Length: 115
Image (cartoon, helix red, strand yellow):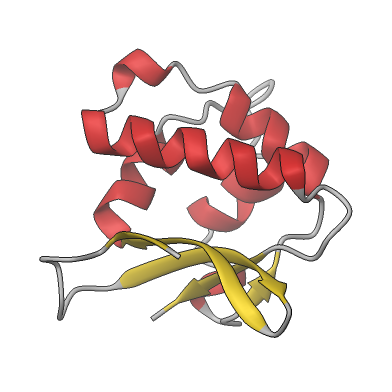
């Protein structure tokens, strides 16, 4: 797992991953980076959709961790819609890795875990 949590021990952690040969493969991060990325997603016609919907209602991975992303393609579109230049350097790196994970595993189950 790519580790963007080091130095933030004791704070909430978000993992986005797939299972590959019974091992988690993905990204581990401080929830502050994930929050910055999710806040950059804009509503569609005044409504939250897909992952942004769950994020803004504090549902999904917050209360059912680990939580399977219900629609990988919709999630991918949301992440791709983010203007990377509005994010800090580390959050930009993480966003690129999240997009790669979703693109390369669109037919696999992808999980978000909040710990």
